[in-house]
Length: 609
Image 1 (tube, rainbow, N blue to C red):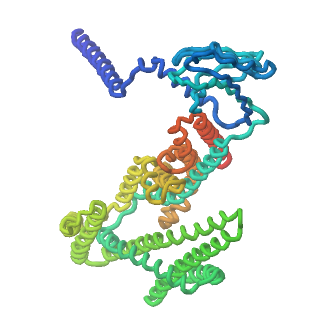
Image 2: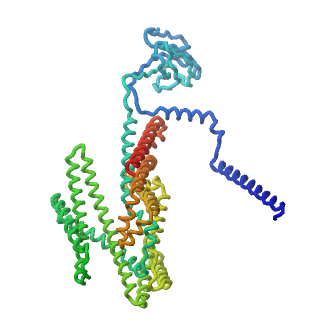
Image 3: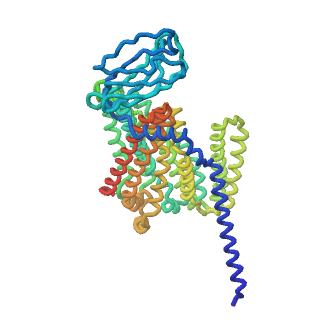
């Protein structure tokens, strides 16, 4: 049994620790108040409160509707200073609105009383001083009573003149039915632009994020391994495949432009090319293999697959040319619907751009996959000494090529201009690292290629998500110009990273049973994804996509501040001009659209998900 003194010391230590923790929290928050310059005394100043009330009242009256106004102006002569001899003034008409000045003259900086009669009840009268220069000065404001009378005292400015001046009262009255203001029409145009800006960004990002999400799913990538020989060959073959793919797309574009010079020719090519590709691929990839094919049959199948790939590239070339020509014709003939022709033309341009990049990436992937399979086959068939020898050479070459590529990228960004530091030394270091890795691994050990791809993908997505779309739009505005297109690109890039992360986490949380069952049947990795993964992720993918559209609508109102188009651009202008009533109309439109998007997404999730 411990002595009571020991328990008392522990309680004392806990009390002291708690007291120190409280003091530390107080110090942290006190320093936080100091850093953030919290000053409640400033909020009580009369100037700040007056400005706040003015802004709140302006925001409470959004500039959405307006009336046609009739203006009534009534003036009375006035002298400042008083003339040496009295001046005879005309008597006003008592049946019409008129004003009386008391006195009818005063010294500069003095004060007079202005009375109005026969004005519209409850109307607002604005009182101005009109000097001989006709540069009016607003003096005061008064509200007419129920009998049309008002009375107020105004302070005169220091504007003396020997000539007669006048005090003018202007009353504006609403007449007719209310109409929408110019601000309302501009807000409607920009809020529609904002919604479709977010829609295009969400669609583009979803199409790219879905396939990328599988690369960032740990449960799918951790089982992908490859021997060192396969990895080295893949790294060396990928750049060559990229160049071959890009060259094939460029040559196909040139040949397609020479062969198909009209709409009918492009349409015929777009029909014939897929038939050739389908027939060649069907022959090269039979559904059943009756016997072990001979070397000649294998070579013929490889040639057929190459033919199918070339025919597929030509198909895309013909489709792109067809869309460009049809879009150009429709844009010139559709009149008010010319935007449909412009849309088709833009689809053709997008397909042309995607064709070059997609073919290059596909070439890199196919050649790297073939090289990896070749490396696996060599690892299992060559003798151990031959495998080790091949690993030494190819690992050194792959390491040198990898770091040389990184050095070239650094040289492009920072313009080092010294090959010794960006090419020779990185190549040597890469070769040494490759040799060290080959010495470290046994001849038949495998590398976790899938996990490497997983960590690289997650790192890239995290880096892109950490950069707000507000920053991205600045770069895109320089590239494509200020406007909604820059906003679409910025939101798309940010959404790709965000959606790929959400999608990949959903893939990681699927039930492993179907995945293991499909894998046990000997299915390929693509078949496993199609039959075991996709059925489990469709509902949450739809939900995440709808939610991202809602987010993009809200984000698009902010990127307009940096030149990304949408209603944010109009909101920024009105705030800078202190036009808070117009800004209130834009904020009201944003709130309505965001609320509508929330209800719509909830309804769609309930029906679809």
